[in-house]
Image 1 (cartoon, each protein chain N blue to C red):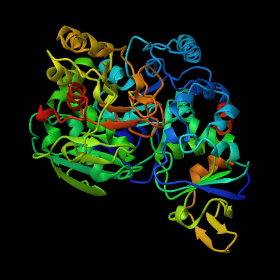
Image 2 (tube, chains in turn blue, brown; image 1 turned 45 degrees about the horizontal axis):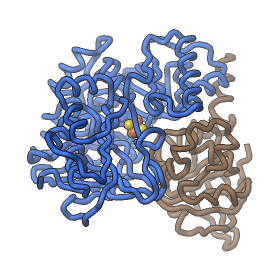
Image 3 (cartoon, each protein chain N blue to C red; image 1 turned 180 degrees about the vertical axis):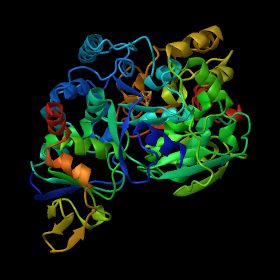
Image 4 (cartoon, helix red, strand yellow; image 1 turned 180 degrees about the horizontal axis):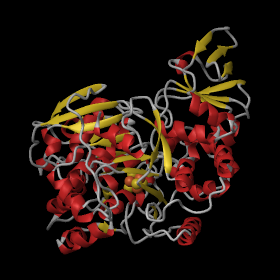
Length: 415
Length: 166
Ligand code: SF4
């Protein structure tokens, strides 16, 4: 069996599971973000009384942090009240950050766990050897009532990545390149296991970038076998003991794809789809209005460092806004201590509260018609960050910073 | 539940994501009817205005990709869609739709044989799609047993309410 199958089997009280089988599995942690007030309504409509386990569910206020409108303030209020009534042990209010990052930092994500959240990017948690998947509000309400969810045991495909890329090539470049090759429907309903020497060497934060974007290929979940760095991180933080699962040697993937990133160049996804990926140097000259470093894809300390290293001592282009939103309060504090935030402010960047920011146009920094943004986030669908008539280029944080300096989409390796 | 559905279709492209089905800027809205009025406004703001109750949405591959927002199927239901047919669906969207009682069928190639305004008759149990103007019958994938039981109960909420009693 694969590690993912072992996780599903263990949580559904079975010795083994097979592909296609529907299992009822226990959820180790359930998380609701602030777009999903409907979860509470569905919970009540289904006669839910109390959350099944007060240590295993939490709300995270990230999309509207802090509340920009009266309606979103009301959403927060009702969620706070519900969390209070249910005496939930963990609660992440507007001072916390993006859900996937804050749960990881809080030690609620660890190898072998099943994590379900009302957010498609829950695939991120494969970075720690957990099985993370996203659901809608009503599915989530059934979990809050019962602690379980039905899963179809997925086909598992292998994406093997070998090689050590050149300096300046970030995990974001790697995953954009793979997206371009696999396409946006390359893994619909399947689980992706990332393997290979490139993955073996990555730390937690870098791994999260790849697993985060697995959902952009349609994947149900992503997985990476924990390495030393992951185990150390989890051992320091995990709130309870955990068991790492290992894939059997004779396991057969349903499909296998191999990539070598040794000579990879800087990549960019051009509007309006995540798989519309080209080497940056092959794209025409693109003038930008806004750069954005942040989100559950590109707002961690590594990402801020990459940006700060490029802009330090310089000024951003006068026609560009550069928006910096650390993924969490912890990231923000570390970035302050390391001086990155000061570097960004000196360069003329705008710093904002940890959270999702304009990633899905629910908060600060949205785009006007005709504007162009280069961003370290994960989606460039039409209207994703504001007007339907704006344009979004997905790139690494280094590329965002380089572009903010010149005012044009710019390869950080060429500076 | 009605298992034979007859109606006119609107035909959409491949990779229609949840931001196109229901743009993020409307996510604060909780009133279902109001949600319905913004349905597919990321594709064209006039679609919901001109949509007749009972009509059918047809799309290409990977319909509903993107976020896990339930607003997407809620919007489709409240715009009056009786059914969604597509070459393929994104996973979370598929689960959400079943949970909310919106029937949907995978029918490979469907988006290429139909055009806006064509009338079809669909048997959602058998998975057959009859194109009325030509009489041609296409075979869609059948909905799995567990999903069908949720649809028959009118969505997962009634099913769970029963379970909470017992
Ligand atoms: S940062 Fe963006 S992608 Fe991540 S959870 Fe927030 S809105 Fe979703």
